[in-house]
Image: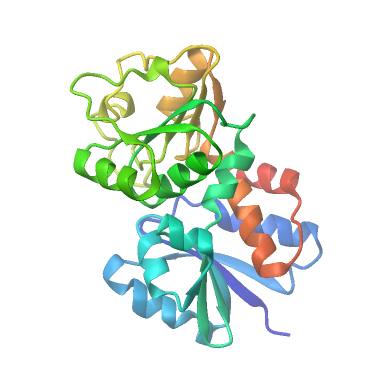
Length: 275
């Protein structure tokens, strides 16, 4: 029997833990001989053509990461209501000659939080596809959402589309004022073989040198690497509750897994594989 192929599409993609996470879940469920999952590095100008060709190579679905999430939605023949409202997709299914788009970033983020963000004040850093999902999820969950992006106009556009307010801060962001902080930018992402960025993550994100975090906050960094990111380390040092990118990855991956297989995956197995 031919294995049903899945993958994650991005550029760069060598850092991705998604293949390990899904492969471990398949093996734990005893379906490793039926399913496979791999990473595919696809340049932006090749995304539409290469993605459309995947079903002919045995692919039944794919996750999508930076920088292709908006392109994935544009390519789809059909899309879930959440993906349409967010304006980005991270999960594709190839069904009967059609590409179907969904977004599991939003429910994955909410599932990873230690408590509901309802009634709290949240800050989302960034304005890309991951930020769109975060803002949509948090606004929908009843949080008061503010958005900061290095290009202020993009933050204003995102706020106008999905809700919340854009911050146009001249000095360091008043990070301590927020109950929840979500870094949805790619700042701090490790690229294998790439030179280390001389600008610190905190500086790049317009934060005070110490980070400015405090006890009682929840700080989420969607970026993950071989160790704590600079953002997570600073937040933890200040006594904040932290959620790293691997936990969010596991949660959104589990939601994608259910879409493709119809089966609930073992979260503990996926977490262990991720780390």
